[in-house]
Image 1 (spheres, one colour):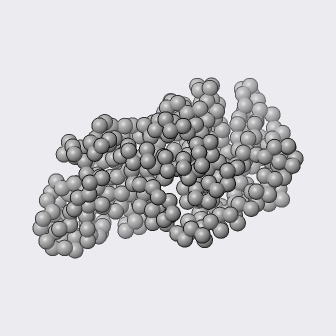
Image 2: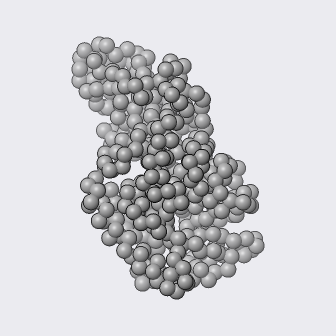
Image 3: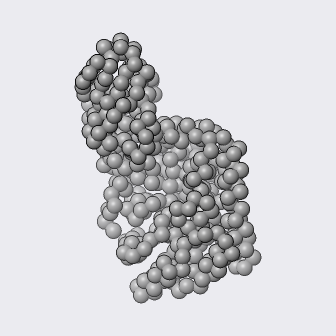
Length: 376
C-alpha cells in the first residue's frame, strides 16, 4: 500500500484544512530553537536569520527562548521583527537608494530598535553618510566581506582594512564590525566542510586582528548561516546566524548529517485526480512548493512510498506510483504530507500557515514578512 501513516505529522482535524497549505508544528519549532541555542553555547552567541520563517509567531518563540538579536534579508522582515518585539536587527543586505530612505523611516518608526545594514564599498558608504547627515541621523553598518562565495561583500585583500578605515571615518555612519557569509561551502562530509570553512575564514581573522590592533578592541563578527553553523559555533567570538534549522528541510538534512534538527514545516496536499492508470494528481503545483530545483528535489512525501514526481504545473503535480495495488487503493481526497527540499522559498509562497499543537491545528498564523513592504 502506498499511503502510510506516521504519528508525528498526522493531524487529528485534517479534514477541516484546505489544501495546498503550509503547516507549522509548534513543538518541533521549539525543540529546534533549543537545539540551536545548545549548539551556539547560549543565546548570547546567536543572531538567527528569519528569512526562512518570516513569521511573527515563530519569532515570538525565539524571543521567549531568550534570543535577542536577529538577522534578516529585507526591510519588511526587519519591520516584522520590530513589530514582534525584537530590539536588535541586522539587515544582511547592502541597501542602496531608495532603500536607504526606507531604512531611515524604519529607524524613526521604531526608535528603540537597533537596525543595521551591510556595506561593501566606499561609494555606497558615502551615499549612506550623505543621506544620514542630511537628515541628522546615523546609519549603523557592518562591513560585508567576501570570503569565497562571490555573491556580495568586498574582496578580502590588502585594501580591505583601508576600506574599513574610510567607512569608520565617515560622518553619521557607525561601523560595528564584520559580516562574512560562506553559504557556498556545503560538503556533506563534516570534516571536509569544516576545513574549507576554517581556511576561508583565515583572512577575516587576520583582518579582525589588524582592526583590534588599530582601534583597541575587536570588531563584532557575524559569521555564516546554517551550513557553517556547526563550525562557527565552536568560536565563541563569532556571532552565528543560522536560519533554516528552525524549520529544517529535506535539502539540508541530506547534506548536514551532524545537525540533528526536526522537520517542523510541511506542505499538505490532496489527491484530486487519477488521470491514468498508475498516475495520481495532487493540488500542489509551483505555487505551493519551491520549484527552483530539479523535479526530483522539490518535495519528499512522508506518507507515500514507491513514487516518482513526474511533472508539475502551476496548480498540479502528477505522481507515478510503481505499485499497481497502491494506485488501486489511492482515493481522490486522500491527504499527503510533504517536506520541502528548500523550505525558505516554499514558506515565501504562503500568506498564512496552519499552526499545530499536539497534533491539532489550533489556529492560523501570518507569514507577514513575505510582503515586500509592510508599512515602511
